[in-house]
Amino acid sequence: MKNSKNKNLKTLVYGEIKKMILFRDLKQGEKVFEKTMSKILGIGRTPVREALLVLEKEGLLEHRPGLGLIVRVLNKEEIVDYYNVRELLEQYAAPLIVENITDDEISALEKNVATVEALFQKEDYRELVLWSSQFHNLLAQGAHAPILYKSISSLDDIATLLRAMASKLTDGMLKSMEGHQQILDTIKNKDSSALKQNFIDHLNESKKRNLSLFELIG
Image 1: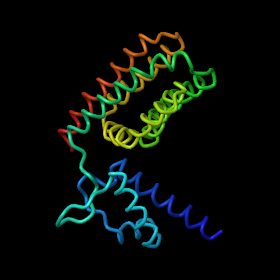
Image 2: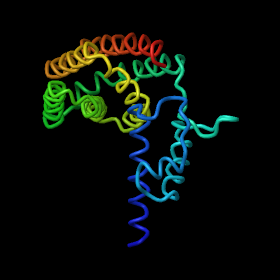
Image 3: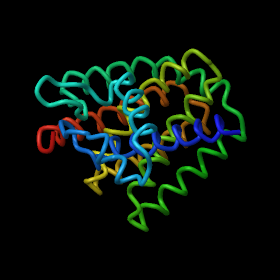
Image 4: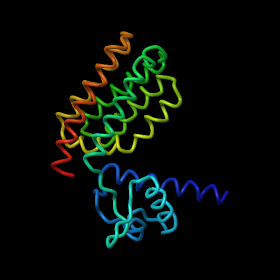
């Protein structure tokens, strides 16, 4: 029982610190102190230390000579690479989604789109980012291709980080929401060629927006 509680605590602490990084409560390049995190979370230093080690292995944190542990700084080349890889994966996924997605999965996408719209009206942008990320996970699941899903899921952290960065611009969020609705409509129409183009347009819009933001806020 004790081991189970310790494992749950480690998972909780890891999740909280990770959200702080992805939602830029901890900025890129900012120092991360075990003692400070322990105080913020109101928890002992051991689970914090273990969580920081995992996040370092995942590449969200890194050790810099003379600085210690910092939030890893995302560079422009990584952002471009991310979008190029996603385009390749989504072009492969499009016909599989059209062919394999179930009615229940389409209903889940519809619920997601409606929820995001409601969150936008409430100006709950943090929760909106999480639901927007879920939209793309639901799409990947709809392809029913396990290796493809694993490949797309491996991009989740950088995707959430970029969406959180883009949430600073309401116009960008509106365009993203419109893109999601177009994708959903195309899936219902069973048009894989149009879905490929939807994915390209959606990615290009997001890429342009995030590269511009990157230059401004880093």
